[in-house]
Figure (cartoon, rainbow, N blue to C red):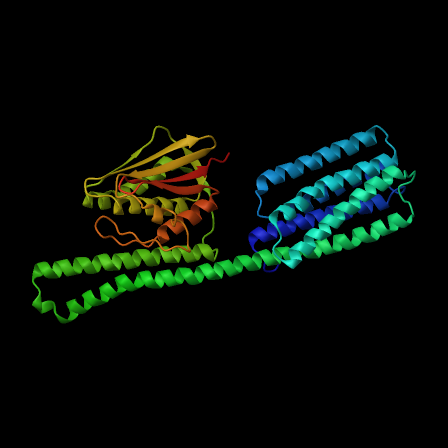
Length: 424
């Protein structure tokens, strides 16, 4: 827990809750004949099944499979096992019947994560060993159910050779499973750190390359201004200062995006959602970009048929809208058109920014929103872009559990869309 990420801490807590519940459940079971039967039978076994559910949910969260669907399936299995066991107890079934039901219930709860690890194709010795431990656990539980069915018992505590071996095996597999889970969490976090370091190195190499161009231009232009200004006319000086301003503006924009991106990666930018009228937010950003659009005689407008309130982080979505509008203006020709629209789709709101500009080639479209890909495309008036703004957009939309994508045909304009969930 001391160095785990927020995501991994949730997984560790879920696994820990499972182990705590399993421990409490077994304590109640061992207090049989000391505490009331309702506690030592119904509550104890209910807690054990819930503990198994928590533990398996944590285990499955470490696989690459779609977690949400598996989560609901796991909860469904647990509820079914709880109902069957408690109904059997209410109908005063025998001890042996209850043991068989519990064994099959635990077997069913631990089966999905075991299958998940099988289908994921473990790629190292440790994962294979961890998988085999859970396979052994499943076999042991199943054999327990079969043994209880073949050799019925009248009392809960039975001192046979099989029961002794079962208890020892269960303890060892539980211990190995706990240590194994902690090692899996560490392995996953280490892999993530390695990927982040690789992305960081690639990212800074891209930034260094992108800064070199405008910085070099600024240096040359400022040198001309410092040493040869007397040789130029007023019009030429005006042209040079305009070029210098444009170069410095590109540097500033790049550094601004770089600062925001680094703050996101280091967790300095916190997600602070609040209820916001999305119409007003879009209108403000359209108004801020009106002057830039007018320089290219571009018709920039926002069209909406309804007012939509969304719970979002205003600063993050401001950045998303600002970057997408800037890009749309950059890649739209003189006398062009940019239309911003929004609509409700089920429990989500979709915002679209459509232009009739130069479009995006397929070779570039595939690289958008990816840090490990270099995106180079100049605007209609040779404006420089580096793709960093789109990386920021992707990061901020992910924080909102939304999606962002581009639809475009080269030479026929582009549409950038993002979707945000409507909460509450």
